Image (cartoon, rainbow, N blue to C red):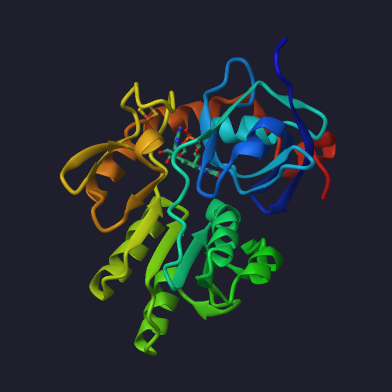
Length: 292
Ligand SMILES: Cc1cc2nc3c(=O)[nH]c(=O)nc-3n(C[C@H](O)[C@H](O)[C@H](O)COP(=O)(O)OP(=O)(O)OC[C@H]3O[C@@H](n4cnc5c(N)ncnc54)[C@H](O)[C@@H]3O)c2cc1C
Ligand code: FES
């Protein structure tokens, strides 16, 4: 019998970012911080990687945050509470490195604000002092604060427009803390590729070992198709099986950006011509796409 991946909760947490709680007792029992799943919204859709952002082994549920970007994420967010995903594979990838480092800095942007929570929790449980910095363009795009504040020793926000916290980005707050004499023994960042690169560049002069949750384009998630190939310290790695946590100081960022944008034209054409696009996020919600 085909397994069912039922959506038991779904709503837009901030504009364009949707929270999904999905029933999958098998994944909820096995998952560790830093791992991801490959999701297909429907039979004809692509498989897209999404970070396991929380889970409840007792309830048998997992939590995903989806940033709507192109066709596949749009198809996903058009699903409603009560619907089922077509397929869900995981947990995939290596768990993030968690040990007693000392002072740990975690940074998150866009979907990474949701995605860093399990790591913040695991780092705290491992005996670390955890500093969390999150970023968004404006304060109305910040979410997941209560959960992050609940596990972090220190919690900071940054916004591009200065509407909350420091005006700027995660790497700016990090520079300020280091300038004030703060020492960090380990750092980990999750969010868009540009943010990861900027954060890794900011920790490099201070010799802070830095893991980044790389979001290379993925297809099979098994190391076979080569789609998620990155060069790390001159060696070829596949993010799906060697990551997703990769040493941010060794990534060939220029190559990664070229590879990430390889299908940009096709993605834009596909997005422009896709049927779901005729509905705004709010119209989809009004049609039963979730609860506010
Ligand atoms: C390990 C991992 C964990 C991720 N976790 C999350 C998460 O928790 N929440 C979330 O919203 N997003 C996450 N992403 C990114 C997400 O998979 C992509 O945004 C999504 O696949 C885009 O699909 P699309 O069709 O909507 O957009 P597209 O139109 O295909 O692309 C829009 C942009 O996303 C990039 N992209 C396209 N396909 C993929 C792909 N298969 N993998 C990665 N990037 C892609 C493209 O380079 C382009 O810049 C993660 C990616 C990885 C690799
Ligand atoms: S997604 Fe195919 S090798 Fe990683």
